[in-house]
Length: 105
Image 1: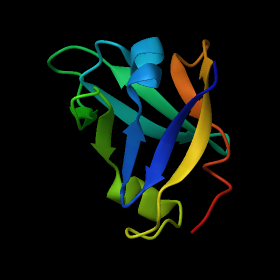
Image 2 (image 1 turned 90 degrees about the vertical axis):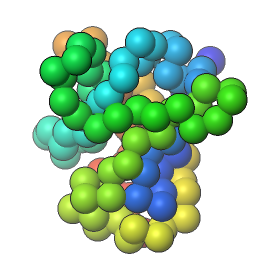
Image 3 (image 1 turned 30 degrees about the horizontal axis):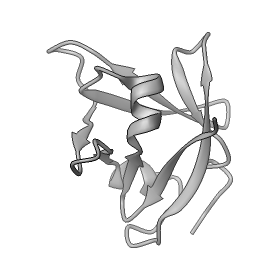
Image 4 (image 1 turned 30 degrees about the vertical axis):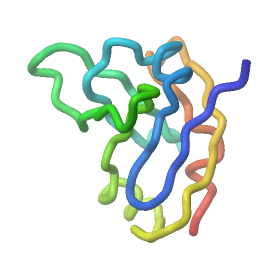
């Protein structure tokens, strides 16, 4: 099964299937640019910090507001949503959002 996230409108939407597979239980996450790659790191615990992964709908999709981070990548705050495949990078303990660093809208 291929997993993905949706980026646009200043936010990152994580479908429930992706959340359950890779981020289950995480209440917040951090977006990090490392080696020209964008990583989504799940954070756990009451003092973990990061951006909240708010439940968006009854399906259980999660959304995080990332306007400032996406702006630094050159994304307009009102850019239409685009889908990006993700894959788990074990050594980083994070999801790689494939192609996000190269995409500009």
